[in-house]
Length: 183
Image 1: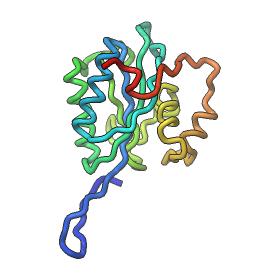
Image 2: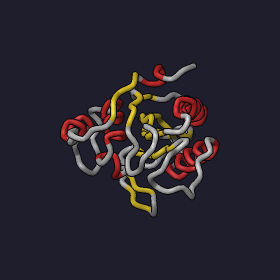
Image 3: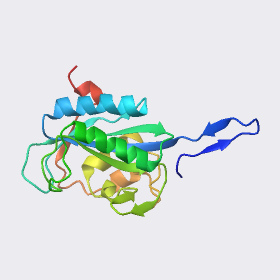
């Protein structure tokens, strides 16, 4: 359900907040870019829930390992406004839209969940289908929100992580949250 405002019985405007979850990834100057992204996300959206940082091998190409994590926050912004702000933060970190899908990244911010909304509009798909495909999205999301239910699959993220095939898992937890980053 998108963030909306309604008038209360006394005429005051009441805004509804939506819980949003975003995946963060970087394999170029990753400590600096992830730390900077966390600061900018907090400036844009307020207090963040921050998962552990996971070090993951590059998927789909040869490259340096990634730092991956998931953050959560509440917002009254529309999904389009959230996506636009995420893109602006990526661009401020040197991200270009003409790069290949599987390539090195200064910063990658992917909207995973916007409340329990299910949406398929162009490139925007909610919940993001890659959540259950990639450990670097699912494990930190399951860490942050183990009892939250996937709006399509109707299983909790803890259940989805428990069922995930970890035989070829190529990631490990670096440390809890932003504490793993310098300064």
